[in-house]
Image (tube, rainbow, N blue to C red):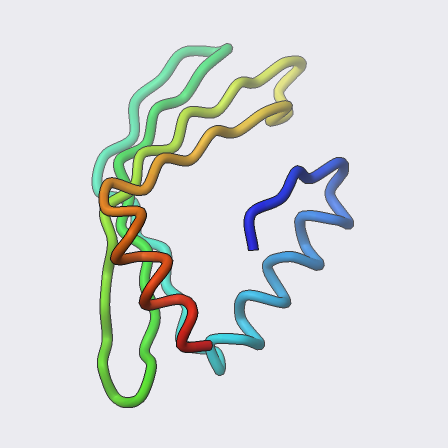
Length: 90
């Protein structure tokens, strides 16, 4: 499902797809957030429920802002293999 997003509409369409694929069980939780006017670092947990099993994965998001708007975001999943395996169930 990884891809590049250009614009708010594309991002919102992707989020709707994630919610649909996970049958509405997708969750994103902020654990820690810190930043400046230009960059934000967020330690997060994201997850969903598949076949009665709820799983969460630790992620780090780095966001770049300009003029008060998010311009870029990089997301790193700590255990990409386990995340890919779990998300393939949807």
